Length: 519
Image (cartoon, rainbow, N blue to C red):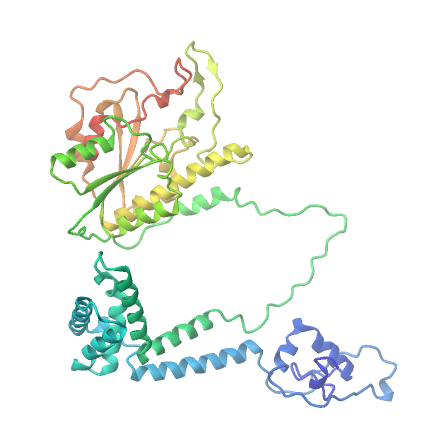
C-alpha cells in the first residue's frame, strides 16, 4: 500500500478541499509533492482504512473531470506553520519563565549595583587563586557565597555573575597562570554557569531564537512555468559581474560615512607598535631605522616598529591569517601608535599611459594600462597574468585601507601615501575610487588629504604625491620639514634607465625629510 492510501477516505483532498471525483485521482494528487497538500495532511491527520470510490455510471465516459472545491473552511496548516506555532509557544513559555529569574534583566540599567557585585566576584576569584588546593567545588562555594551574601534577590545576583563571566572573567586571569590551574578554573566557571537557572533559561532562549531565525518560509515558492525556447538555440546568457564593476563604482561614489570615531587612550603598559605596511626591503635610513633611532633616544624601549612586506621576510605576508589577526588585535587594543602604508602602484601607475623612451631616446615597449578612469578596478579582455596583477593590487589596497580605517577609528594616527592623481581623467588613481572618496567626504570624514612635491623634501625626481591622513596635524609638520631652498629636478621618473630598470624604481624610498614629517 502506498503512503497516501491511509489518508484517503473520500474523493476530496483533505489538504486543499477539492473534489477529484475518484479516490485514485486523490492519490495521484497527493503523490505530487510540489502542490503542498501531502505536507498539510501528513502529520496533522490520523491515518484510517482507505476507501475506493470510482466514477458513477452517468460519468463513466467523461475524461479528466476538473477538480472542484465543494467543501469550505480553513485550509490545514503546513508542517512549517505547525512548527512555527509550537516554537512560538515555547518561546513565550521560556520568556515568562525567565522573567522571574531576572534572565532578561540588563545589568547596564543599574551600573552602580553591577560594579559592586562584580568587584565581589573579582575578589572571590582572587581568593580562589591564592588557595593552591582549591578545586571547582571550592570555586562554586566562594561564588555562591558571594551571591547569597548580597542584599539582592539571588536570581539577580546570578544574572550579574553571568554578566561578569562574559565580560570580565578572562580579563582577570594573570599572564603567568599555570596551565593546569587555568584548565581547572575554566571548568569551574562552566560548572558554575550550569548550576544557575538563569543561565539555563538564557541558553534555551538562544537555541529557540536560532531555530526561529532558520525556519523556512511558510508556503513553498510557487513554481514558475518552464521557459519555452527553440531546440536549436545555443545562446546562453552569462552573468558578467566583472563588466558591471563600473556601474557599481558609480553607486559607491555617492556613499557617505555615518557615526563618530572613538578616541581611547592606549594601555598604560606596553608593548606598543608602529606599523609600516608594504614597506619594501629594509634600507639604511628607512622609516623603521629613523623611528627606532628616535624611540631609543627618547628612552622608549617598549615601542616596536613592524615593517610588513614579503621583501623583509616571507612570513610578513598580509594574506597570512596569523599576521592579519595579530595586526587587527593590536589596533583594537590601542597598542598601535600609528600606521603608515603605501599601497603598491604597479597597476595604478600613470606611467603605463605614457610612451616609454630608452637610454638612446627610442620608443620602447612597456607594460600596457590595466585600468582606466571609468574602469578603476580593471579593464576587460586582459590576459591571465594581468588579471593576477590586478587581483594582487586590489587586495593589497583594500587590506591596507581596512587596517588604516580601523586604526583611525580607534584614534591612532594613520597615513596613506600614493602618487597624486593625474590631471587626465582617463588615467587611473586610487584617489578616484568611491570607497576612498567616501572616507574623505565631509562632514563626517575619517581622513583628510593634501598633495605635495617630494622634491621639496629631498627626492631625486619630480614625484607629485598625495597623503591621506587621520588624527594628525600633517600640514604643520610638512611646513617645518621642507628642505631649505630646494632645487626642482628636471628628470621625470618615467621610462627605463641604462641598466634596463624602470626609472620609477630608482627612487622608491621615502626622502629623509619626509620621514621626519611622519615621525
